[in-house]
Image (cartoon, rainbow, N blue to C red; front, top):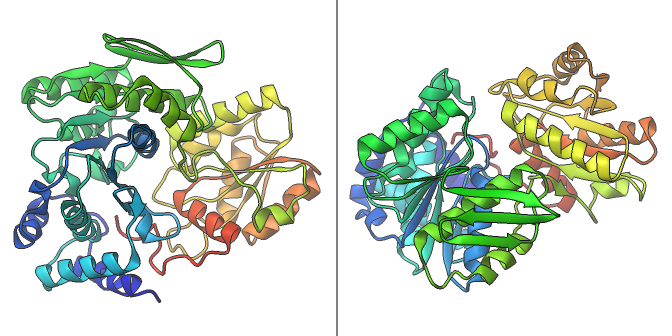
Length: 442
């Protein structure tokens, strides 16, 4: 076991609850660490239900294309915990991560603190000790009481699309969830607001007015859309005619728009239109409609089969994934086989209902090593109840074997969970996963 994994496993035991939204414990440990959150470069703070990670990836790619040095913080990880903390453009090293975690562990002692809080404190320490032009900071859960929301004055706040997810922590309605997400807005700091339902947008505007945060709202102050095979972005500063982004799916037009609106709100002359174009073309983000090639799993398939991976795991993510697959089939028809696994903390029915008349067959699997996985047979029953021919398989490899029996050259999409995606990426590359699952406490 890696040294960092051993420390992370100890940190899991410091708080009995998986999630306990509060800033009290965060303020305590940061004070003991010398308040590293006050020594960070300008911050782009990103909240939302769907699209946070992709918006972060677009923003980082654009800034790096401009020659800027960027820190970034995201969660959960897929294969290695190190993926969460990128220091000056590079994944944090094992030596540095272990040392920072031990420093935070010593500062905290045996007092209760959640896993996400203490690891966020370690990330702040790392970012405070290495110079960079910007830090792109993704909220873990919610916004108002998220551990990242200890920063005083970000350069810009971003709220991506809001939908129903994590209701047990954030509320049962879109309005309640939007209010929690809008908790990252700060007085005098521009809030870039992605495409929203009317209910979410109205609630965000109420919070913004109360705290004194000016807003730049999608489809009101800026637009991002496709036209003639190009991405068009328009705001008060003008129109950009750009290539379609490297990330697949119509929803990525919205996420690219979030990032472009955010970097333009910074008014940083170093970020040119050419940097925006280059960033769109070079962006990468694992498990977001990712085409898998040249790995172990491809060896199990005929050469003309396609293998895709997506980590979307709620109803709104199911909607955009279904639309993406429909668009792909319109351009290049292939029989679609879904391989689906999901955790019981999500709402599988809201996800799978979107794929009726899109998937020819659906094969369900349990997510390896996850105590909260939904049994494959239960998922298969749910898919059949939604009108999708479905059966279970004992493993990912068996599911792939069965897929090519059904159709000799299918388009296969593995989906339903970021934690399943982590196992897929590890199997594809032969890399050993961290002992600590990405599904372990946020």
